[in-house]
Figure 1: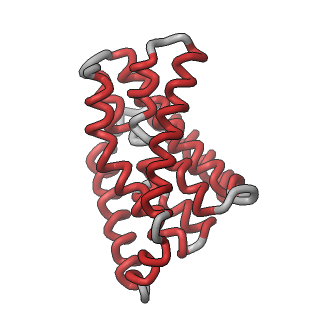
Figure 2: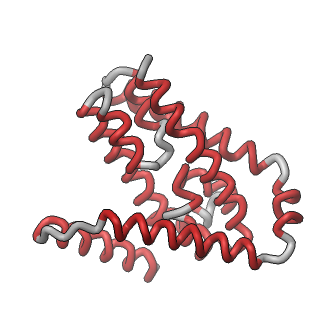
Figure 3: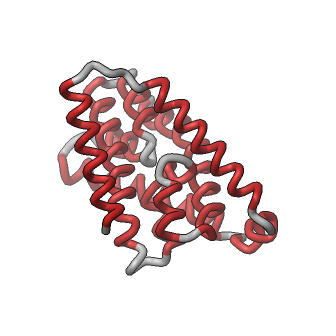
Length: 194
């Protein structure tokens, strides 16, 4: 539970700094993300038997991202029905799979309102993954719970997944995030143009 408190304190500290100062961390955040991916690559490279692990994952490495795509899009459709906004936008927002820094700007090119909604909905998915993954894996297999992070499982939420799910979760989480990251830009644009 200490980790959860640190995440929440960090989030609220960031909100306060953002509200009361004019610091810009855009380039620093991007550099930190590249450093994080580099460190993940080092960890995977140091792992013995990576090829064996990938073979052992087998079908789940493809089925899990597919299930995440279907579940996310169905969730977006349900949200649009529940909140009474056009189905197209509900599905387009959910097609970001947690990648808020892409979803917001892509959708804003078609609709500023849905760009903001896309940004906030996908940011919320990432935050909820960071907060709730440690709790969810007490009831759901840790490999399946990876899906809650969507595209972020190969970068920003990966440290949380590995910390609580164990090092064996690294490869499935990275593959999952990589596939969703590759699909999201095309899928968001395609749906938004309908």
